[in-house]
Amino acid sequence: MTARAGRIAAALIAACGLSCATAGAPRPDGPTSWGAALRRAARDRGTWVPAAGAALVAAGGWDARISRWATRKAPLFGSPARASRWSDRLRGAAHLGMDAAALAVPGSWRVKGGRLLLDHAAAVTATSLTAGLKRATRRRRPDGSDRESFPSGHASRAFAYAAAGRVDLEESALPPGWRCALGAGLTALAAGTAWARVEAGVHFPTDVLAGAALGNFTARVMHERFAGRGREVSVAVDRRRGGWSVGVTLLWGAPPPR
Image 1 (tube, one colour):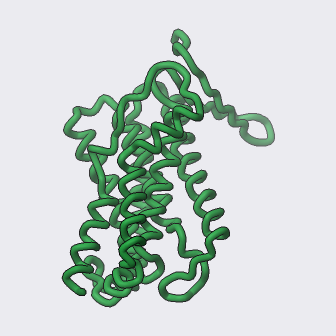
Image 2 (image 1 turned 180 degrees about the horizontal axis):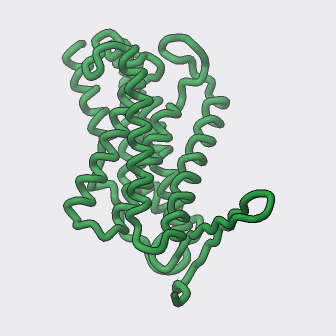
């Protein structure tokens, strides 16, 4: 069982750790409907591969066995306690990586600020959807601490960060090799976050795989719908008497002359 669990665990990490292949086709010019955005996000490999992995693990009855093996052996992090700490650190690093990628998007600081806003909106949306699914499924965690196991919030948030960051890198002026390497790094951080939750004993493999699929899907939908060539999300912040005002602008079609 140990050797089989190890092979399955390696396959799970690989399923989560998609990098250059998850970029997807370039978004078309002009508006993208919600239907088209949903279809393109569902076809993205970062969505369907972990979703298929979760279905495979569930069908094979491996969920609890892998969880017990990972908690007992802790092959990557050494102990459940260390895995728990590293899940937060790796998720935080993915967050910073997404922010850096947003700042690499060409355009003015207003455009960069708008992209940061969109990236964070995607992550918050993924977290909200995760919370709703947790309340609906009420799956008990492997350690029995509560009934908020499915799906993993750490995984959904980290993979939303990674997906949004990869989209931003695709649109940056960096050389293709750098875009691919940095995108792989973001995905590796998200995959490490997800696996750490399994080693920590607070999530089953299907929890983190479903979270990965949900986070990637949500971020891709948001970017398909609200960002891309011929579109712009910008934000303006003004100081006014008694406080600050924030304005958000969504533009479709040809960008206005500058």
